[in-house]
Image (cartoon, rainbow, N blue to C red; front, side, top):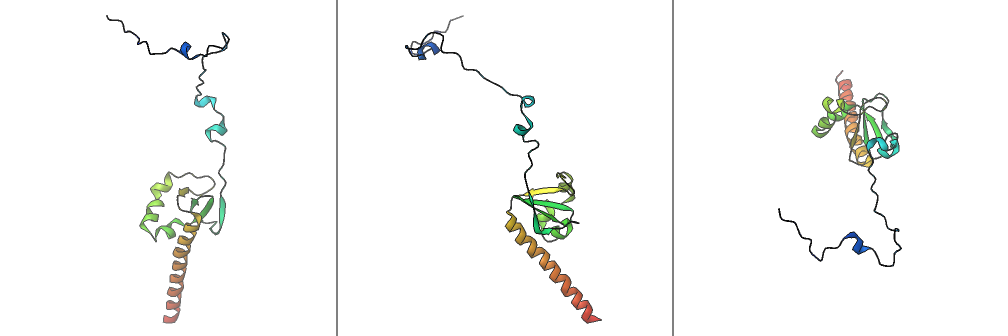
Length: 144
């Protein structure tokens, strides 16, 4: 076997020590490796609750799903909301809700839209349905 020769320009750790350092004052760096069991619950993110505020208008006590947008939580009726959009139908499908966390009641999903944008969407959906229901009731009343 051939022995590998170290080129002369390769420096060893001793070569990097300044010459005016007293002997024994330089030590090797220490490396600390933490395992999950070494971390505190706070470091793991456990027990740290993200605060969410209920929306003033669109938090229905009898709603069956909570939608979180940023720091705002909406509690709505999934069938009413899902009826208006294929995208919302996918997001609020029973299979998606089955895997959603359930912190304090109904399943909770988080979406990336801002609370303001989701509020506008809910206003359009719900006011349109209320208006539609009103027109249907008026039509029924007039046809009597």
